[in-house]
Amino acid sequence: MIRAILSHADYSGVPRETPLEHTLFACDELAGFLTACSLVKRAKASSEVEPDSVKRKLKDKAFARGVNRDDVRKAPKSWASIEEHIAFCIAAMRATADALGLERKATAQ
Image (cartoon, rainbow, N blue to C red; front, side, top):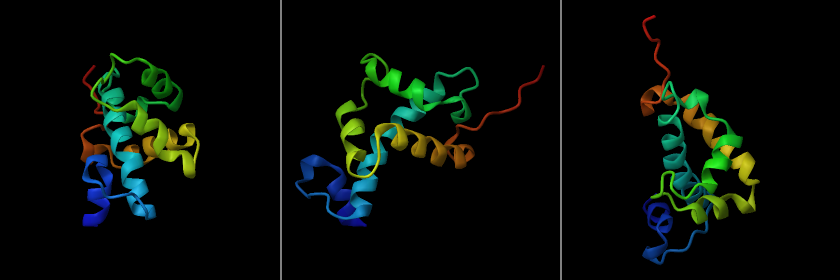
């Protein structure tokens, strides 16, 4: 586990070798970006985020500028397309949206 965390940061010098190490790297930057995408939606919910809109927002350098787009794009190349990777991460975040604070809340009419 510690090695996976160390390999997650390029500056640590620990190369990513195991599936866990690659998965952690692949999902970290994208999770932050997906959170930003959720928070700009009207309901501030992950349920409103779609892969196509995420791909468009990735091109907008002003949106969530702290997210490293190169890391998001290069991470899944060995096992999935960027579209599949985005869809997978959206589904994972939706499954835990309440714990992440991204659950759609009913609003009073």
